[in-house]
Length: 433
Image 1 (cartoon, one colour):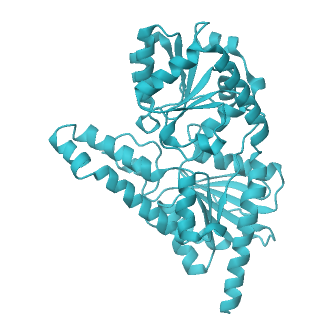
Image 2 (cartoon, rainbow, N blue to C red):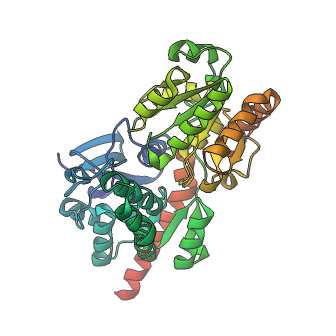
Image 3 (tube, rainbow, N blue to C red):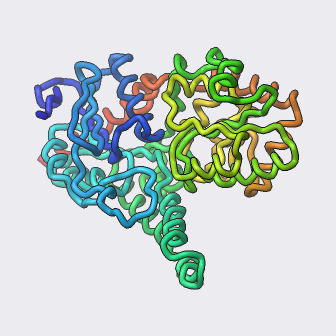
C-alpha cells in the first residue's frame, strides 16, 4: 500500500508523525487506545495538523479524515519471533533500524515518540540527527518497571525458585539491573528531544533534570463522555448478563490479566474475604494468563468476561460497586480515568502513586500493602454503604469537572508544543545557513 499522506502533497499544515511501536488490535491496551482516540479527536475538532500515527503490524493504512491517518508498518524483528520467551504483554520491534519508516519520516515537520526504547524510536533518533528534524516525546508506560517485573517472572518460570533463581533475582539483582538499564536508555532518549510530556511526578523530575522545566509539559486528562458516564449505569442488566447474584459487592478489574497488573493480589484478597463470608463478586474485563486462575480459585464468585468492547465497558464501570486498580506500575491509568468518569469508586495501590494525579479525590481510596491490605480495604468498603454512596458521588463530581475531550487534549497540550518545536528547528536551520 502506498503512502498517501498529504504531508507529501505540499500541505501548509504542520506535519507530525507519532510513533507507537505496538500493534493495533481490539485487545490493545491504554497506550495504543489513547493514541487512536487522540487521532479521532484531531479529526472531530478539525485541528490544523497533518497527523500520521505509526503502529507496528501487518501493513495497513486507515484514513480517519482528510489529514489524519493510522498507518501500520511490518516489524523488522518482532518479539513474536522469540518463542522461548514467557508471556509477553505486548509485542514490539527489537530491531535497531526500520528502513521503511526511515524513508517516510523526513517528510514530516515534527517526530513524536511514545517510548524511549524500541525500533521506531531508535530509527527516529537517527533520522532526527541526519535531517535536523525535531523530536518530542511523551511518557505513557512505565517500561523500566515492567522490565523488572517480567524479568523476575521469566527467571521464576524458566529457572524456578531454587538456588540459581534466587541468586539471579536476589544476589545478582538481574531484574533491577534490567530496570536501571531501561531508565538510562529513557534518559538518553529524552536528552535528544526538544520537549517532553508527562503525567507522574517522578517522570517530571526525570524529564526536568534532562530538559529543564520550560520544556516539560503536563498532559490534561481526556475521556470520551459518550462512552463513559454515570448515565450508563445498568445494575440489573449486568447482574443478568454476567450471572452476578443480587446483593453482591461487585469489584471490577479491567486490563491485562497478568502479573504486571498485580491481579494475583486481588485473587488472594478475594479468597480471604470469601472465606469470611463477605458478599464479594469479582468481575474481570480483559485477557491474559491469569484468567484460568481466577476461574479456578474463585469459582462462582467471579465472572471472567474476557475482551469487552469500549461501549460495553462503559456500562460495567457505571454499574460496578468499585474498580480494583491493583497495578503497582502506572503512568496515569486510562482505566482509572474511565472509572471516575463513569461514577465508579476506585481502590488503588499506594505504590502506583495514582491518587495524587487526581488530587487525592475522595472517590479514590489508597490501599497500602499486599493481599492483606487489599482484603482490609475491600472488607471495609463492603461493610459501609454510606461510604460507597459518598465515593460514587465524589467520582461523578470529579469526572464531570476535571476531564477534557481527546480533541481538546491534542489542541491545547500537544499542538502548541509541536508548533514550537517546528519553529525552533526552522530557526536552528536558518542560523546554520
